[in-house]
Image 1 (tube, helix red, strand yellow):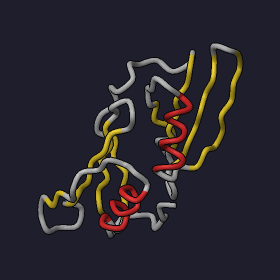
Image 2: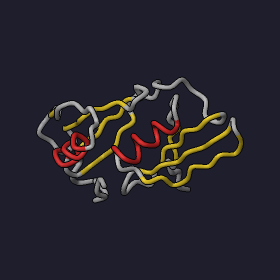
Image 3: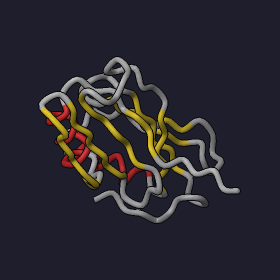
Length: 132
């Protein structure tokens, strides 16, 4: 039996601001943005090349904005990924090279609510998906 990770819930305070950040600045695809009522809305986005999406919402998602820490994206070219983030106005740290082995390099950034993300370079495992 396969157990696939399909969705990560990201607690945010402002759905429209978060939608702009994740879609326009990070290049995630907006899968759906559904309003059920004035008090209930769900937004799902997927990173390019990923089989796992993120979900955020109003009246549906629980959790304090900014409490998601350590979610990790994987790319095959960290310098290119960092350059794209900087070009789109994302405040991202410098490349951290922990060792020379494949998988030992990272960059880190936060979304507007303070949810923290890591981007790891793993050339051997990266899906080949490009950051848009």
